[in-house]
Amino acid sequence: MKSAGKETRIFGKNLVSHLQVRDLGVDLDEFHLREIDLDITSGEYFVILGPTGGGKTVLLETIAGLH
Image (cartoon, rainbow, N blue to C red; front, side, top):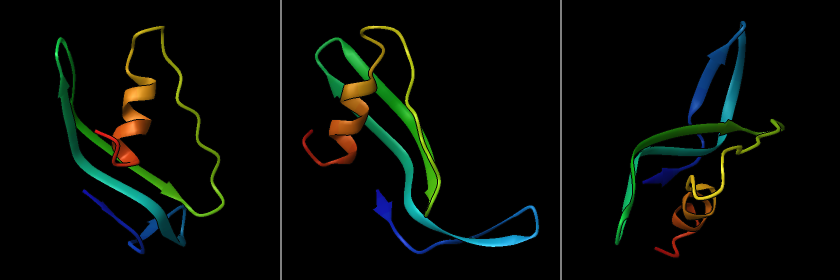
């Protein structure tokens, strides 16, 4: 699910991923997250935005291994 150290080339620069998530999914009663892919490189700012009940907290908890 998670790994670190993947090298990516963006705008001619080699960047090393700090966090990589592939095909993440979770089913909690009536709430589902499916096929989430995410790359956050070292030094990059990242924001999760969405409506109430949209799954922001569930996403973070799942990445942290709480679900």
